[in-house]
Length: 393
Image (cartoon, rainbow, N blue to C red; front, top):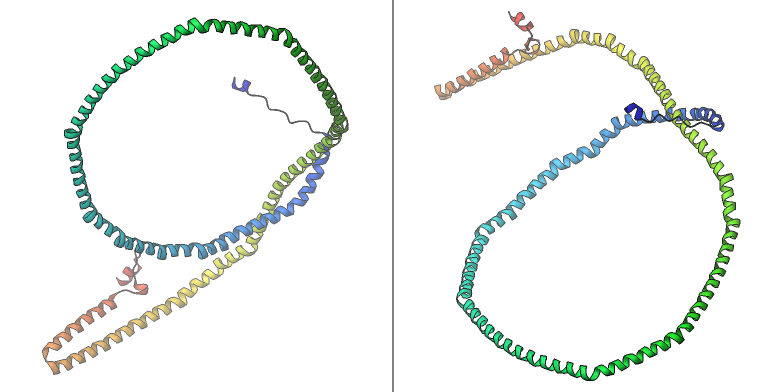
């Protein structure tokens, strides 16, 4: 069911002869022009990446990153710590002491005074203001009752006056009002039979004049419309339909084919550039890298091993032997000097100085013996090596 519901793939629109005639020459010309540009572009990209990785990035690190890190680590952080310590010593600790030993006692005193004032106000309200308020309310209730009685009396007098005025109006002013109404009705009838036809005639004349003016203006507008249509619109429509639209279609086809040709040429040039780059890389490897590697492996490495085994190791052994002999001679000379000093002190100061010198001589001999027993050079034994043990055994 899902496969049936899916819309069928739309076929590409048919292409005209102009598209087919333009496509192949344009693609050939664009390919010839784009291949060198793409090769130069890829070469510039490779050089740019090499410069970025080997020159710009180390230069950026040396000129920007490392100075900023050093500035942050050795200037900003110690300075911030010093400023924080000074702020703590000069601001935070005095504020804490002020809050703890000054503001807190003052606040407690103000709270105690405020509680006392509130308690006094509550007592005044309960013991003084409340009885006075009740008395004022009782007095106002009495005054209200008196005023209510006075209001009822005034209302009774007002009702009597209004009733009298109503009687006078009904007996005296009503006949006069009826006469005025009959007079106004007569005047309205005269106006309806005389002035209404005159007004209607005036309105009909005004409507006729308005229709005539509208017809004249409409005729002038229609004439101007057709003049503008014939002189401006129809030539522009013809120019657009028969000149600009076909030219635009042709230019659109050419532009689309050029753009597609540029895309295809750029991709093909990429493959060509990749093949050229791989060929040059392989050529460089076989011309320079592989010979250098072969020389290093087959010539320099054996020569280095021979030089190390024949020259450097015997020279190192001879130097170590000379060093051991020199250290032994120096140790014997120091021991002879210490023995002579001990004999001189024994002759001058007795047995105490001799005992001290003998102890120093014994410690020196022990250190020299340990130094001579320590393995050096080729005699040094490492983990997993049994050459030295077999040689000593």
